[in-house]
Length: 160
Image (cartoon, rainbow, N blue to C red; front, side, top):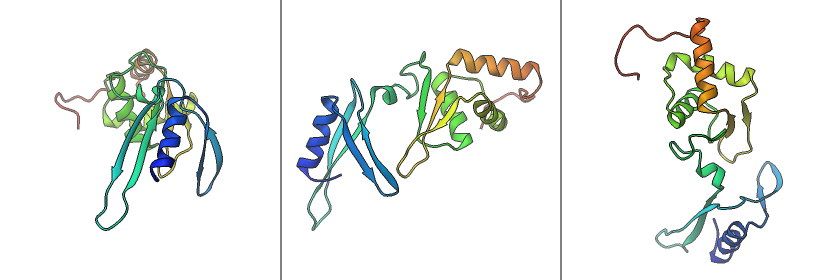
């Protein structure tokens, strides 16, 4: 957030793939680049009686591809929260996995045991990087079902 010149400078750095410095309270300055094909969204926030504020949201191509259906063959998923239920729901939605809420603890345990979930730096959130493909997650589910570490509910119908 800032004025036209600040937002324009960061926008230009992102589009030209140049590094820029990110500074925030409680973090050491960090030099970053969003790489090739980053997406930028600019806008203005207007509050009556005050000067308008320009804002920019920029995301890397890799992050843009983690939305459901964007890159089904992807090996990495970036999520904005580390809540176990959110992680399971997001991974299931992205890859079309057959899961039920009762498996949340099991999936979290598998992700941690296999080193497939890593914390990322975030401002106002607790982002994580989840590594794995649809094929890998289906294999984990298949093995866990065979070993009876998880089970399919007896009742038919929608999962809530």
